[in-house]
Image (cartoon, rainbow, N blue to C red; front, side, top):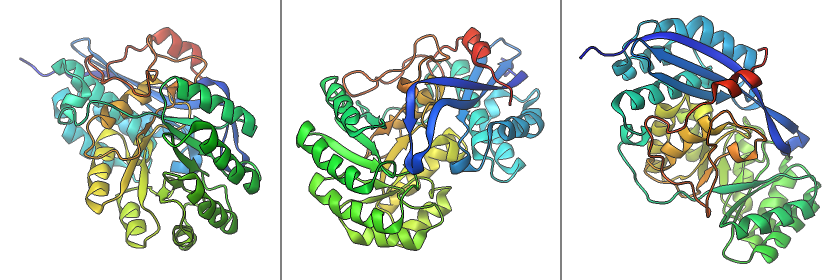
Length: 372
């Protein structure tokens, strides 16, 4: 049997509307999520899809830049490439250009989807099979007011969510500290709470917040300071109160190792866009586990169910997943797949379909297509 060859490839920039604005650390406010969608088609008629969100403050890439790299550098390398040689293509793509991890991610995810569809197995089977039977989902609280966050947390707890992430570095630090106590009182001891400042805090506020977190039993405190501030993160870690977690500073495996050795972090947030896709995230998860770091897997806010599906397959297969998974397709007003992925009773079931297990609505992709 002749192996299928990739004969068509397209990179499609999309802008997806959020169900409501999301406030991030540092006061950033988002109403749309920009992503690059990659479509690969073989001579046998199979189609594989991938996605990577544009996150300039995290990977340094803009949507126009991602499309340019994918169009001019990465996709030409796949012309008439055999689908079964995914590992060989992976090495060539990763070495083709320095950095550009999100651009590489979109292509990498599409290759995995295509390979799973060829073999008629889910992507998690390509990664070694299921390592767990349940995937604890973390819900993001990022409203304009404390009361809105509290009300939303209570509703989501009633739906089975037990993990909550609060966006810090948005409101005055005294208000955010008070919110932790209010959340703990409102949700009770069984809820697991964490906080993420997305580099939006100063050192003094971050240390104050970390110390106050002890009373709320915070699971972890994520990236309060700029991604280059290793000395500051060491001081936050030494302030006590909550284990520190790297996100924007976890650019790659070398950075994860360095920050761990310095005593700056107890865990790490792993994203496909930071690590070049599915294969890179799996490697980082294995190394992080060997270092004894806790792990959270996350989408960038507003990825579609394509990006969420890739993360779910990884969530079911990485060796350890101490801090759950943070999908983001549930925050979209509209998705680009026919059956969007949503948490059910605090988890997302293991996908059973071929490849990523989601069917893309090409009409929706065209509708949300944007100029890069």
